[in-house]
Amino acid sequence: MMLIQLMKMITNTREDEIDCDEVHNVVDVYAEAVARGEDPSEILPLVKHHLEMCAPCLEEYEALKRILEETMDV
Image (cartoon, rainbow, N blue to C red; front, side, top):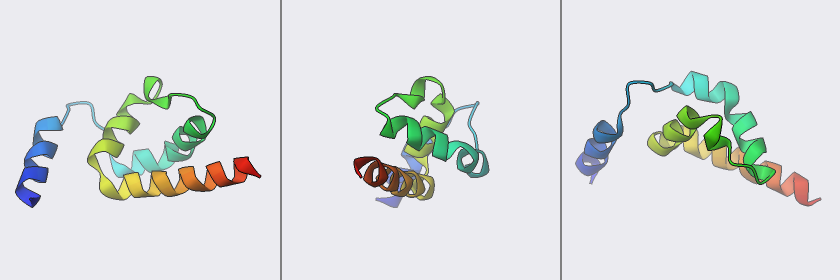
């Protein structure tokens, strides 16, 4: 199973990727846009791609998005 996941990541690797530190710098902007019902992948496509490839960053994004959604419901 890990080999399949590794092969998928290698296949999906792009020349213009960003790293986790760069994602951490803008993940709040990305999550806020999603919470407002916007599609941030149009203005931050590299963040979207990174989140599809990186489980730890995706977990952080999803946690932040949940918090934002809960505070917006209040």
